[in-house]
Amino acid sequence: MPADRSTQAVQVPVSGAQLAGDLVVPGGARGVALFAHGSGSSRRSPRNQQVAAGLQDAGFGTLLMDLLTEAEERVDAATRELRFDIGLLAGRLTDAADWLGTSEVAAGLPLATFGASTGAAAALITAADRPDRVRAVISRGGRPDLAGDALQRVRAPVLLLVGGADHQVLELNRAAATRLTGEHELSVVSGASHLFPEPGALEAVIGRSADWLARWLPPSPAR
Image (cartoon, rainbow, N blue to C red):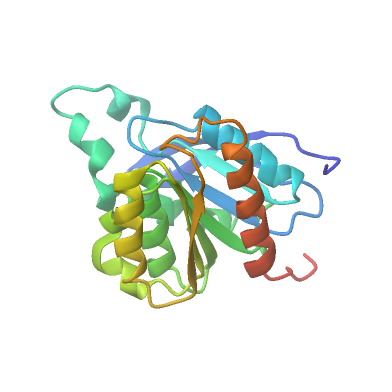
């Protein structure tokens, strides 16, 4: 386990807003994973926090952030649709990727995007829009189909992690995979449902994610 794994509370500047985030960059980190949560979730998602902790143990930094402000998260008729505004969420994730590139503790480190549920679409769009910045993409129980035409523009290697019992999402991932033109892999966690609550399922996600990052994030130059 990395010796230094303290969490830094950050405010990530995006177009028209400041978003709360939790940044962890262990000493000697091999790269940073930028997380995009699903609709109705937040940086406090216990599943994403568990995955992030596992990646930190494997020597990678993580940024868990809210994609909506506190005011936007108050669900009413005026704001409910924002949770499903993929263009807005992807734009904010891309702004966060740009910000990480200038962050004192993360600048120079290879970057991956990690999306869960609808956040997977944002992770893929950011990769498509920042091909020189994003080196790998991971989707956990994601909706890559919502990335639309951006799928064909993604150049970073993509890992699609889906539960074997999550039948509808599995079919959507299979269809989306046919539209990816770069390196990609559909990895099915046997017996797992959408949120991977089954014993050992999330641990499988962590292990496969860490292996993907180790494979595709190049060593960073001395900073």
